[in-house]
Image 1: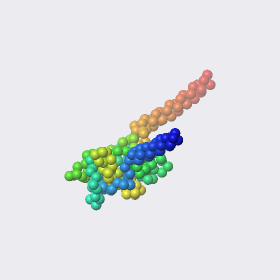
Image 2 (image 1 turned 180 degrees about the vertical axis):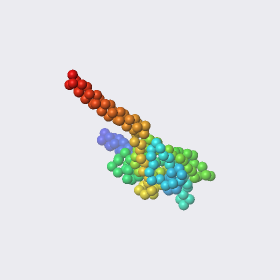
Image 3 (image 1 turned 135 degrees about the vertical axis):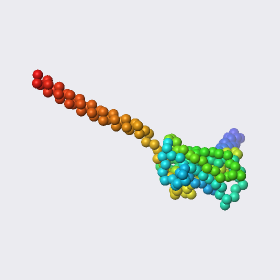
Image 4 (image 1 turned 120 degrees about the vertical axis):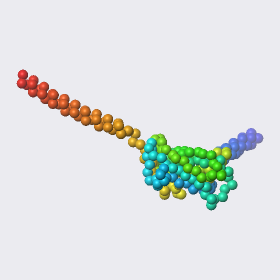
Length: 209
C-alpha cells in the first residue's frame, strides 16, 4: 500500500514536470508565417555593406506580405538586429533556438511601434549604439499580438547568409587622443635629446677643469 502511494506521488510529479515544461515553451520560430517584407538601407537609400557603431544610421522599412494570409491580429511591430550565421560560429551565447524564449539570434532591439492595419507599412531610422559588437547582421521584424507573442515575421536575409552587412565597432580612442599621444612622444624624444647634449657639455667642461 505504501509502495503504491509512493509510485502515485512519483507519477504525479513526472506529469507535473512535463506539463510545466510544455507550458513554459514559447512561440516556435518555425511556425511563424512570413508576414512582412523587410529592407535595410543607408539613410539615403543606398545599399549597406558596412556601417560603424557610434557613427552611422540604418533605415529599416517593412510592409505586409500580401501573399500570406494570417488570422492573427497584430498589435505591434518590433524590429530587431540579428546575427548572421557566420557570426554565430563557436559563439554559444548567440545560438539560434527555435523556441523564441530561448533564441539568442536577435539580441538588439531596433524599435517597437503600434501596428495600424489601415497603414501597415512603416520605417524607422536606427542609430547604431557603441554597445553593438562587431559582427555580420541582418534585420528581422516581428508582428506582435496583444498578449506579447510573435505571430509573424520578415527579415532582410532569407537564409541569414546572403544580403547581410558588417557592423564595425569603434576603436575606443578619439582622434584628439592620438594627436595628444603623438605630441607627447615628440616632446619626450626632444627632452631626452636635449638632456643628452647638456650632459655631454657638462662632462667636457668638467674634464677641462
